[in-house]
Length: 445
Length: 158
Image (cartoon, rainbow over all chains, first blue to last red; front, side, top):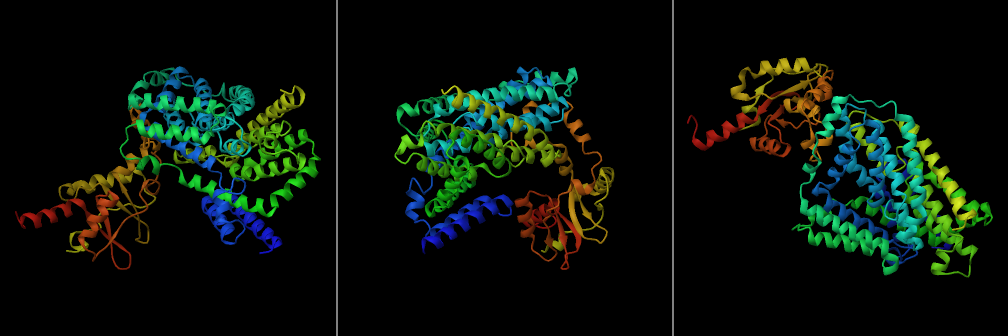
């Protein structure tokens, strides 16, 4: 195949895959795997490149990090620790309706920063439904608030949201780098979020005094099914988090730390047969990533991504502030309507290519973590993660919440979600814009 | 023995537009012959005689049971009066909203082992029987299957 033909074939596969993923007619994992198979069968990339090349192939760092975190959570779930936290939170809020919304939002945000968003929402939402039934409250605002909080919280850390995991792996950024660069702005956004929901719901939510007794009568200690497993899980989770904080110093990839945590918890949890723990791993998501990496590898190899980066440079004329701002806002709106995983998987090589053109002499870490490039990475992460809040399809956590609410006979329409989500998304990106401008372009620290 | 030989021909049935009240009345009357059949569910038949679903007592309890309790151990945290207030939410539902739509059925001349297979796999105690044109002709009950089995085991009449 001539380079010219290869370019158009790869571009065709890439565009078709994107269109099909957006149309949701066929499951996205099937599309990604078909696209990947075509890229290899048609000889755009070799199997060697697809499976082993750092530049063109599957990013196993991302896959093993996601896999290991899923295993840790699957092992922790039966202990009852998450139900305990949720019931404890509701009692901490004294059964007051707005306080419950605020506390649950903050708990969801914190858990989302440490675990993945979907798991967090899947753990918190059932308790929210129960609490709202006990208090005779409309559960819809609570579920929407939790989905939004989960996307905001997930932005704060390397492991919080898939875009961050992908960016960290590609750019070689550490857990602490994410925490210190994105953590502060996420805290500000979270405070603004709680104030906003206070203004919207503060007066509207009322509960009869006697119903609050139902919450206060709940004994959260009953939720703990296996106290020993709680201790083991918290020990391993603590160790893993410490490992994440130290991984830069230890010269270990986050995936190594996570794999060690997962293996350790498997070993000490005392389960005899790992089959069910492994069966509950979201293989569909993992293989979506695998397929996607190969498809993107194909368009990187034929030069489509390089061509796009040239166009982007022409647009911003190498002005990095402008690049950051355009990227953040474009990413936010793109992520609101399309899956942010394929979006970031495409943008990562594009940004690296752009950096190569700007600093042709730099290589490796000096190139990937060029001081002028750093705000661009943070802008991409902020835009792609926060953008998920714009619509009910913007993030997996939103999809879960909408599905759960529908099952309860309380469907959330696209527009109703957007009515809350879009202003909050725009507000949070405005805060992020000010933050990036102030921190990296005015104060330079 | 075939499914037809143990089946009870259509007696009482529901229409998709019936309400909860009709179901409760019909099932109360149908329980007149409880000792032999143990009726816990009724077929739902549309105007042209097609079987469109089955509504069971369990379906009613399921409708009142919040889905979030299924996959969690949160039932420890339920309260007095919860079942009653949840049940109120289904008051104005129609039979067609509550019934089980994916109905397993057997053809009238199929063997009894197939009926047992369906009852065990799908955890149901009643199976609709259909004729060769797919028309619903009667119900086959777990209790009748049980007596058929035990009769074989212990000898008829014992």
